[in-house]
Image 1 (spheres, rainbow, N blue to C red):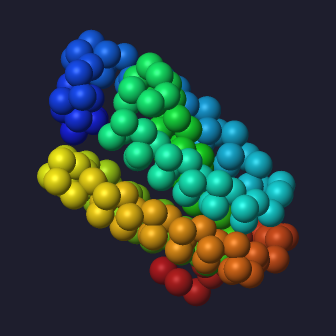
Image 2 (cartoon, one colour):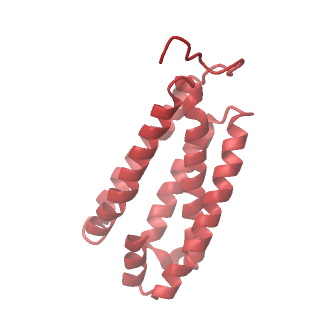
Amino acid sequence: MFHEAVIFIEQGATAQDAARSLLPQMAGNAVAVLLISSLVDKYRMRWLTAVLMAQVILTVWWGFNLDFFGPIWLFGLSFGIASGAYFGYALAALPRYFGTRHVGEIRGTFGAVTMAVASFGPIAFEVLHEEHKAALLGVAGILAAGLATFSIIMRWPEPMNGPPDSLEGER
């Protein structure tokens, strides 16, 4: 959040404007997590990753060009929805791919990777946004396109029917 505020202020926004983006970001994140995670249980939503990656790239680009679309709170809402929807989708879909036997490890790894990206991503954004904006957006775009493509061609697992994987015999 600090890095977002610095970038906003460098583009002419006030500290108050930057702070106003936080509440819509948190609200968009919470609503998206709850909505998407409940829908993943009912529908095969592989296309959602592609849509979310496009929204993430648009939102990152928007962060560099705040004057293009409008108020900063709208940027915060867009960023919150993108990150919340992806987080909700991943946490609901990962057990489908890997089962529930190791759900703690799966979610722990996902949480650690997410925290690392949340910690170091803004630092890269801050360092590179002046001189290397095109390279940063290009790399982010390539990674997002790769993830979107992989999510579409990857086989969706069969529905999970019955109880979770048994833990009998493991103590």
